[in-house]
Image (cartoon, rainbow, N blue to C red):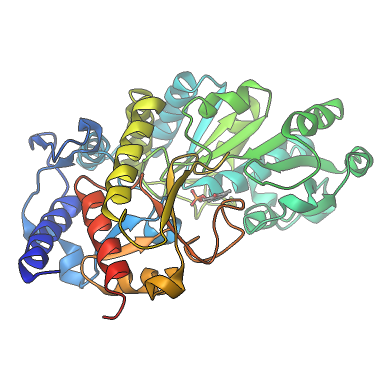
Length: 428
Ligand SMILES: *Cc1c(COP(=O)(O)O)cnc(C)c1O
């Protein structure tokens, strides 16, 4: 890469960093469109660079060619959501008023009986568990978790659906009962069962989501579904509550593109009311530490509004446009073949898969990933890069995986140039 290219990138990068971190002031700032990207992705005009605390703190901004991963701060909020957040910061309100009104508004928009804005999908799962304990036992919030082992407290989960987010339930003091077969499942219900949890994007487990629900309802046990990363399609936001799941959680900061520390618990009103009772600002409750500030509650509502103005086809076309830009940039790399993979349930968006022979090209995908991380601008590739068995059978140790949906205007071009440069010049 010539030094003038480098300067071009640096200038471009400074602009991106400067404008991404700047909060548009109260809608006074005009929206600037960049390149041919749709308006929905345009960046707000920058405010004073003295407000750039990433720069002040020396925290590097990155190009997110991975996806909505929590450790990469997931999504950026669209400008209209950023403006709603900034405006909400101007006035105090009564937190309970805002929690209630936002829940009612979201429930109406997302076609369910009740909704709670939580501090994420994980917190939604905790509040769902507390709600199911309360529903089965008449428990007051201050009893959770200390006295839960003396109450009905069993949650049924498929063995294949055990996951890291089990902690979110376990902090309520419940016990998880594992099942494998449908017969196991039918036999697992006891008078102590309070809830079941279904991990929606799990690719394993013998029992499908409809059967899972039907059997639980035959026993009058409420079902929670973890659909945290399972939007798009947009209709999933009402599909699973519509099929009868009593409670469904989504991350607010993933595909919905709200604040990262926000999420949604959607479902039956009597249960979302109990979830709210176990939530902050009540101090004697398991949800006390799961506070969502007024700005983020408003941001979550604004993100739902933003999302309902989008459509899946247009968003996917934009993600594919970026895929094509990167594909084009690397097309003359020896042995390289490009394909596009759209995972079935979670992260259901186009991922570019670049597979090549590292012996011929002279660098492995893991090494490319590290090189892109080290150079400036720093680029994060999808974590499936260089590992097999992720994204079904499509990813191998010879595959670079690029998620395009979190790229900002102009960044697909940078990613394409940089991946190409590293593959064609593997020796630094
Ligand atoms: C991301 C994720 C969560 C946690 O979501 P947060 O909004 O970060 O709390 C929970 N479950 C699954 C399946 C997820 O993918």
